[in-house]
Image (cartoon, rainbow, N blue to C red; front, top):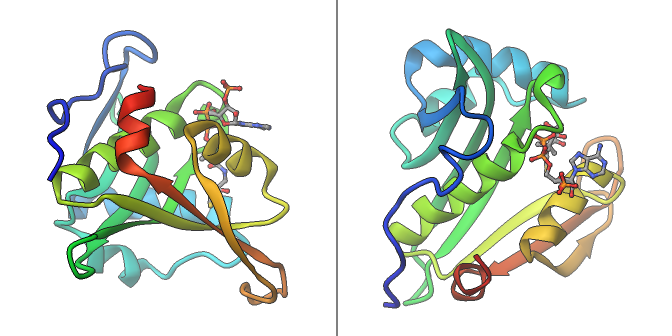
Length: 170
Ligand SMILES: CC(C)(COP(=O)(O)OP(=O)(O)OC[C@H]1O[C@@H](n2cnc3c(N)ncnc32)[C@H](O)[C@@H]1OP(=O)(O)O)[C@@H](O)C(=O)NCCC(=O)NCCS
């Protein structure tokens, strides 16, 4: 397996100094769930977040006493090419546009790489321009379109990222 730089958040002391990223805990879940409901037309149920507690790439962004964003991701073994999956990512509306979504995504990729992932995939609504811009900018590429993937009929774009290439670009 390719070795990568230490599992550190390289931007931790550069931008958004007052926002810390750390592993999610049970006490964070109500705030996470509130953000989820404000961010998505079909939010995950509370219990879905509980199931991911303890995953290395379930992270929250904390500003003072407040949770202002989160990412949920995990790694599935896949015959020598373990696949990371970004399952959920959101930033509280009032905290958007300040680099937090990118920091959460980057740190989740680092955690998944440390966990063995060489490829990371995700699904995104085809009209979710802010998320698409972020993913494309980080190097995610379109793998396929899945018409009707979401309950309201919107198409999903399945995107993939080669982890080695991502580290090379950092
Ligand atoms: C997608 C989301 C997580 C981005 O979080 P954020 O903290 O606002 O993003 P950042 O400030 O880190 O921006 C990173 C990049 O995303 C893109 N981006 C962010 N907001 C954007 C917007 N309103 N329009 C276009 N591109 C945008 C840009 O490429 C930006 O890079 P730049 O600042 O160098 O231009 C946030 O918009 C969100 O929570 N949306 C609702 C939930 C959601 O759709 N999650 C993704 C599910 S797949």
